[in-house]
Length: 327
Image (cartoon, rainbow, N blue to C red; front, side):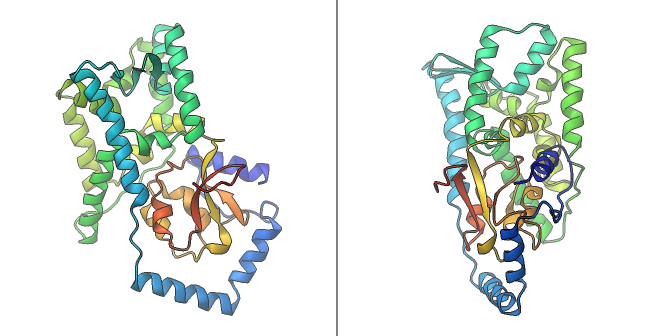
């Protein structure tokens, strides 16, 4: 991968638009494959495969249900530990102790450090622990495999799609750079006000605390966000607003666990982009957009596996970067 293309993938995480690779970024292997795919014979084969997929769609929800189970188990540990005083996991999603080990969400930890103008040892230990875990799996894997709000937003998204199919609602996208602006804003507010302002509106923490300690009026804010996503902007919080998602994306830039794309298997029908939670990372699956014959999805990827489930050709798969061991 050329350094320029690598920087482009990082820039996409901060709001840059996807683009085709330039001639100097494109590898010889990718160039030859693209030429081959455009021949009349291969074009006809691709059309036949797409037609067959449309007529006999393959429904696979393996990774989807695995994620749902993961989110439920992780959050259930908090509930059980508090309700029955098991002391397995103490605290909530933004800050906790697991079997005595401190765990701290990096975004929340940075806010606390800026607010108090002091770096606390326990907070540092907890943050480093969490960074190591989510660096391995890919930072935004936290969003799709652990975040309780993510599960609610995914259910809200299914309602939005059902309403959109009937023409009752329409998606209104925002610029993804807004997430960067909000990240900077909330960090500045923490420093200037000495309060972790973001945590008052952070739906991840609100939902997590409501599950563990009981509901509060703060859930009205969560209900508003979900309604906004159902009726106006699909997956608004996760795609355009959440500072936590940006932090985890940066942490997982060079994660071992990745989604790998294989150009020679792709028929470019676009089903993967339709189901993707962050579809800009899958623009490389469009005809002519791949930089290499094999490459890894951009770091904003949540590793949700929906694209893997949606691709009957096997062009997308989980892999361990550098080892290429299929999971």
